[in-house]
Length: 182
Image 1: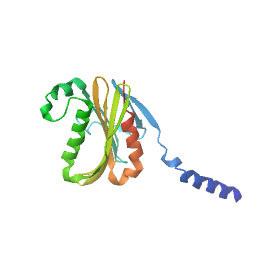
Image 2: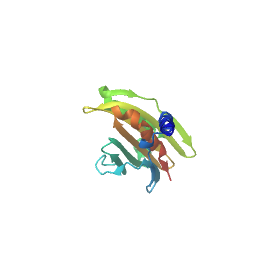
Image 3: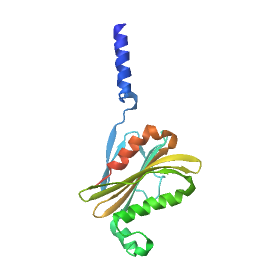
Image 4: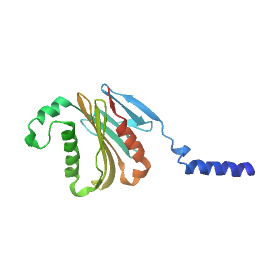
């Protein structure tokens, strides 16, 4: 009987320490032509999340999704060379465009949006933010990443239902922050 109490107590301490063995996530490194990204092994490839995405993964049962869009830097910089459009042809301009367009498109359905976090490592610059917004009749939690290296801009969008935010926000953030251009 003492062994049972010891095992039960150890299990409770293990759970309280945040080491729930039933929710362990294994991560898989996905190799694309121009970048790598880490995804949880519970995600599967999709084809219908975003027509312009070159990476689309989801777990429909868990309601967890991610897409990656890729754009040559020269395309954005050429299109926005005319600064009368309001966004300079720089990483900050690209990030401002994505951030402001998201706020504009969500308009009255936007519940919250964080400030952007900016990181720079070598020739890679990364801007991230998160948001809760209502899309159709669903409240969703989004993690956004905007990454630029010397030649390419990447948009990473991961999301889940807002009521699952606490359960998946760490996974979403890890996916978004793991994209690394080659």
